[in-house]
Amino acid sequence: MKTKKIATYGLLIALAFIFSYIESLFLFQFAPGMKLGLANLVVVTALYSMGSKEAFSLSIIRIILVGFTFGNLFSLLYSLAGGLLSCILMILFKKSKKFSVVGVSIIGGVSHNVGQIIVAIFVFENLNLAFYLPILLISGTVTGTLIGILGALIAKRIVIDPPR
Image 1 (cartoon, rainbow, N blue to C red):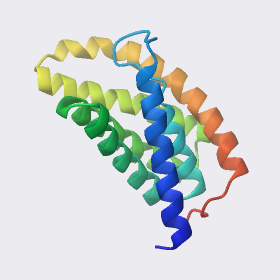
Image 2: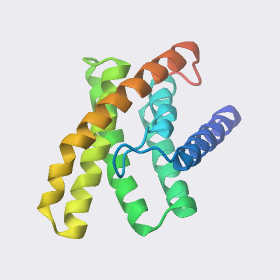
Image 3: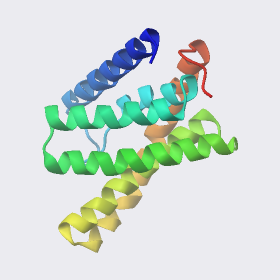
């Protein structure tokens, strides 16, 4: 890896980590488990300015670091499930070239919530948790839109390492 790329990764991981910490300080939550997804702003920006592999790596490293620092085994499990599904779908939908940055970000926000609900259903062995999904889908759409708009503005202004 080139020095610039390593330094960029470090900065982006630190930025995503800080955003996760800031988000954990917010006391306002419309419903349990709902967050703005500020760290996903870094992932969306990396996806459009660096590439898929880089964004995926960044997302997984951030989730693991935040999970060990601020969470527990269950929060790490939920975050990994949501983050993996979210990142994979964002990469696939971006590659389809049929969706804008905002559309890809909405898919990321919604799929993150779906991944977490699926894990919760298995962990608690309670299919009724799926009834919470409509609320999370709305929040994922709203936050995905906001993150997508910001991510598009940032990605347009910077080119860290052109995607391949």
